[in-house]
Length: 415
Image (tube, rainbow, N blue to C red; front, top):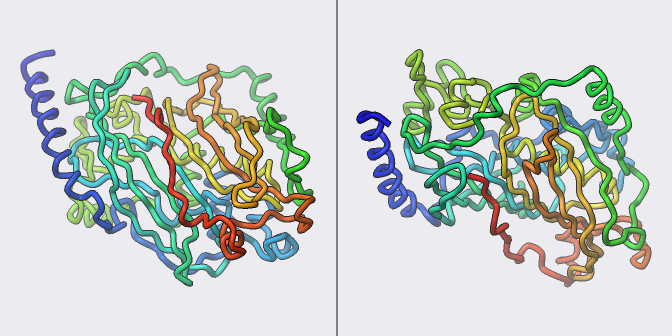
């Protein structure tokens, strides 16, 4: 490291230390939510739900795409997939730390109520913790944990999430993320491999309108796998296109940088400022972050694991809890398989529930994301044929789900 780079690194670490103290002063403060796009708290349309499900998740489940089908479902209407709430708010809570890159490390979710056409859902977010960490790929980094509440037009709590954001020095500091240089070559596939992936897509297993009863599930059961990939730039663009917001362009980008001067990356090659999340498209920024190339957004993968669970649970089930940690990069060219198995059967507050271990495995055999989930299922003993939602159990005087604290995975980091 030359003298200039040494000075850069020293200044950067000093900045990390100083900014951490500044960021910690924001713990507990409810933050404005216009950093990652214009706030859009308007009634949810069928088009909003359909676009998210199809483009952002790659899910053509008629429960989320067909209003006539939804009207015949246990919900009585078309509803949104659980991950649709990312289209209301990214859940990213990463104030301060100017010049320190943020990377989505994972989410823990509790889903209480469905989102229906016509609902207006708003988000409230605050920082709840800042931790310093060391890791294999980064000598020193921070984790900012945020709490996000999603509330509908009736002031009912729809969902609660915590999000873990990794704040990692950029490469120019000399202390950025390392160890993924061998992945700069995009994965290659033979025609037979692509054909096999296509067959897996065409034969995707979806439970749909056939109830999966709690009594029919056994500990150790495998969840039918779901393929996602090979990841292309079109997939990443489609993920953005399915959202209700994207990063502001042109004039709006300049306006946002004036309002949030810390939320910018300036190209060392061209001198052009842009949103720091552009590394999902731009190889220069990706390398500056320490990624081997253009890569997905972290919650894109959490969508995929949500898709795995809703396919398995069917129309009569409910994904109540989802906790996923992103552990390795997922870059253009990679293929992932969403997989899982049943680890326990319980009755939380009288609600028949299934605990699962879930993960994403790439073509190298690596688990790039992993986590746990709780799915509520109908029970023949109850006799309704449909799982009661968490708020319905609370109303019935059983467990008050909305008062249950969120739990975080202790090893939910990969730098």
